[in-house]
Amino acid sequence: AHHHGDYERMGELYCKVSRLLYFVGAAVAGYLIPRTTELLLLLQGPAYAEGAITVAIMFLYPLQQSIGQISSAMLMATERISLYVRIGMYSMVVSVVITYFVLAPTDATVPGLGWGSEGLALKMVVTQAVSVNVMVWLIARVWNWRFDWYYQPASLLLCLGVGWLAHAAVNVMLPVVETVEALVLGGVVYGFLLTFGVYALPTLVGLTRAEVTTITQAILRRVIVK
Image 1: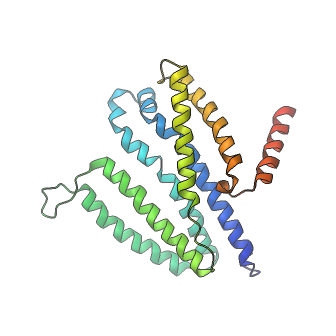
Image 2 (image 1 turned 90 degrees about the vertical axis):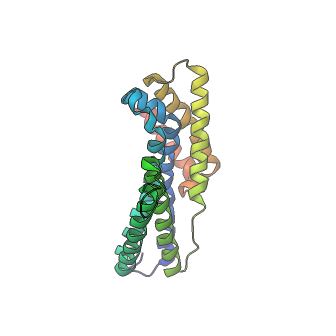
Image 3 (image 1 turned 45 degrees about the vertical axis):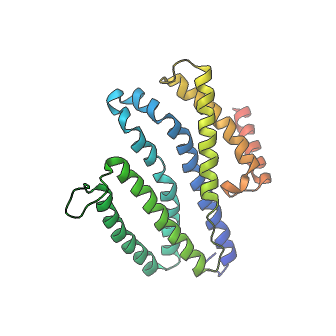
């Protein structure tokens, strides 16, 4: 599309892929975050349960990472290498400075916040979200597109809301939630509820309702045939 100068088509593809990949990451995070403590207890034991907050925050990291990968590929494929390099250099410098202040003790010569692993995880997620959205904004300016960002909080809030709802439902149905059965049942409930969410708001995954219906019917036909 870029080679033929079809920038409208290029924008449609970029928007669709960005939304879809972000939603996939949000869907995984929405399922895992409410169950972080249970996962750590089940897989690692009580000694690791105190790290639940850090792990929960890091489940958000792949969301922006997906957009960053698509955006960087977009810039390189369209010969905007210098812009990509400048964004990366500025982001790295800012990240190093923020890392120091997040981790440095409060009584150091140059005092920091002393937030430890939780602060470092939060810093990684926030700084990446900012740098990635700066890249998306610059891409929108280069090709005179609308800065498309609202799907990010909308997708995350939908998936987290459905995730906590499914987790609460499993807690009611099963007396012990630190089991494989609880995780499986939670996944089934979560997937069922999230399907309705996607059908109600198909633009979050870069599709129309007709496309969602077509894809769902195709999947059902394959399942029934098998």
